[in-house]
Length: 295
Image (cartoon, rainbow, N blue to C red; front, side, top):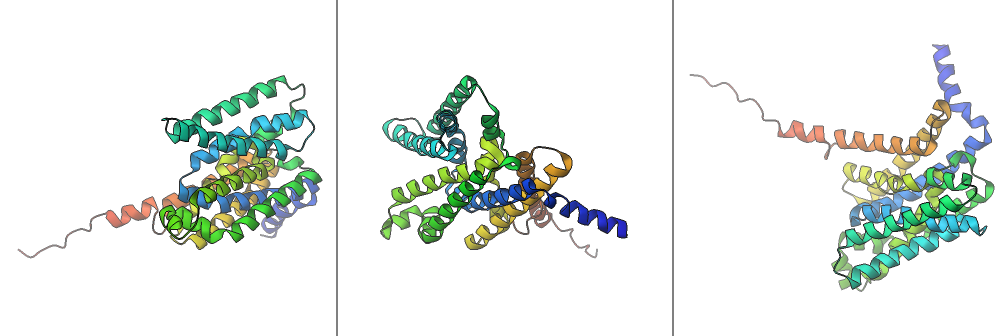
């Protein structure tokens, strides 16, 4: 018994002896919580595809920032915001539906990024941007994540009520004097910043999962938005810690482990949610056997 307890304690404490694990936990938890908070609005508004578009469209900006020696956040923010603006322009000036426009823009931008990557002599850092490198973050990366995360959370805190009203009823928001177009722009801007925050943790390819899965999981577990925010943040933080520990002990991808931990939480909610779980609904729908009647 003592051996088992010692093994469990060592499983949790040994990784913390390494500074790179401590850094990874900090960045993964902060990025996960920020993405989780924003994912609640992404889920309610129905912008999952938009999150995918922005996360892929920032790749050319990241590559150009690498070429010119600028912080990755600069190019990512420029191309993220530019892609959102381009989607809006094409959508308003053509008969093509929005989902098709999103698909055209984000695949084009991602393809442009891949072409630029193929022309860069050293692809080490760019490979980390594609797949994440949370175990190798520098002090500058940590400060970038912390500052951008603080900006996103501060804006969300001050505009919380307006954003929530817009998510639930944009028509009513407009009726009470709130500009839905302005809130839409703000939400898309926050999405671009959030994508940059999550790049260090899971990379461009998996970042879309972090801005969708926590909110979708919380949506299955509660009908109250305030509680949804708390559940999504808790799921993301727990998945971040689980993913970092799993990657350390199993020697596997950290970003992939974090996303798989989030997907596991979603699966459990999908199956066993007290109100929305599939198994719960099946038990409710199952017809009760009729009582025997006397002849």
